[in-house]
Figure 1: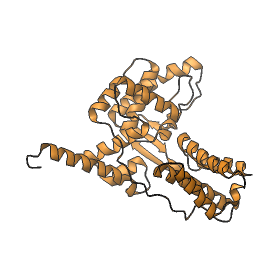
Figure 2: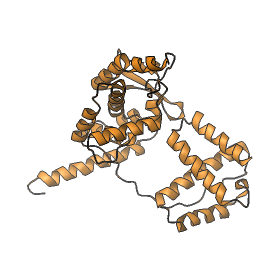
Figure 3: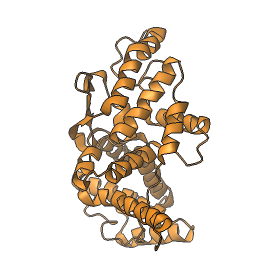
Figure 4: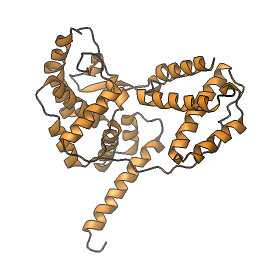
Amino acid sequence: MVNTCLKQFIEYLQVQKRASEYTLTNYRSDIEELFQWYQGISPLEITQFDARNYVTELTYLGLSDSTITRKVSSLRTFYQFLVGKGEVSYNPFQLLKVPKVEVSTPTTLLEHELTNLFHAAGGPSPLDKRNRSILELLYATGIRVSECVGLNISDYDDEIGTIRITGRGIRERYLPIGKAANDALQFYLEHGRPEIISRYHRSQEKAMFLNYRGGRLTDRGVRVILNKLMESASIHTNISPHVIRHTFATHMLEKGADLRTVQELLGLRNLASTQIYSNVTKDRIREVYRSFHPRA
């Protein structure tokens, strides 16, 4: 019964919330760890006292505050799902206090690092053309990696240079992609993607970005691509799709964009989630001021 509930919950996250593979893996891992800890009783029968003991055990194991907070958040969401299905009468993790986690400053790339990264993605092969268009698109729009790999050919309007994104909770938004990304995407679609398709006879594949076998590229595939580009560009910053997303937001604000616009472009539900990027630009302003003002 418990395993059936977990399967239904994961399907709910995947279909209704359009959660990424990375998010699904974390949820599944966090919930299965709880199942293993409560081998003596059914997880459907745990109390708030049991839940508090579990969090205490996580603390004794030396897990960081951020990891504990994430695990509790996963379990709280899972049990709320079970309450909605009538499998449990209340959520034992609902009122549980968790450690306060300081919001860290997001990692971003400097402009010269971006230039090196784009240069590394300038190869002649069909996959090089794909990689360049992915990099250009991520930086041009700040979309999530799950949104990137979820793109279909039909989501792209090459005449006006926009893409349609179906974000979390099946929310749609239309984004301009800029000339550089539009040119790279058109070049890939004309000279890269057809060669990948013909090599594996996948003419019916509707995905925008394909793997080397002609199927839809995955979240993990994009992470592998960025890691290889990072090595080629000799960049020592830990690159991920989310770093590109952070860089997009930070550079937009540095060039004068307002928070509300950046929020809409990123597909965030509330303005507070965007505020962290404003803090990044303020830090850089202070740094530049102290470095160059004669009386700083």
